[in-house]
View 1 (cartoon, rainbow, N blue to C red):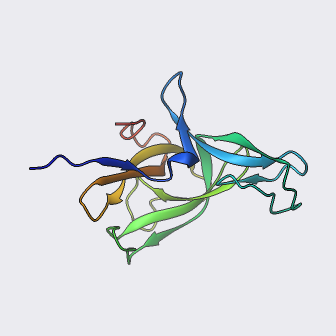
View 2 (view 1 turned 120 degrees about the vertical axis):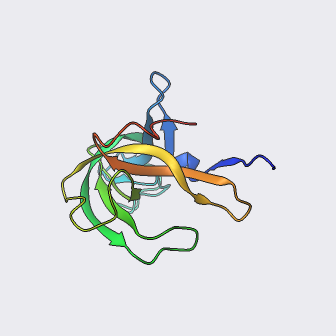
Length: 148
């Protein structure tokens, strides 16, 4: 049996802290108006300044702004699963899969504190494991906390 590869999806959107290995999101912040974007952008969408966006850490924790349980999965994703918009304290709003909770009504609430994890998202056409960022409710466990 051939060994499968691990592919990291959207690897430019996150990094690992060299001191502890915890992942954090990388976004952009406008020096002129203060707008924070995820993912990082070359031009500020608010003040349209092409020279003011700088790369910043958005952190590794946020709060659920809104969420949905999807019962019909996108290709390559097994339904049901939870997606959410997560507000980051350093700014920015991130659309993400949610792990560590049941994909059912009442399993997550708006305002829940969540933490960033890097986990298996899906398998590609060759059967390789594709990993990327997700969020999980704080205290939901330690699996997927760093690179594997």
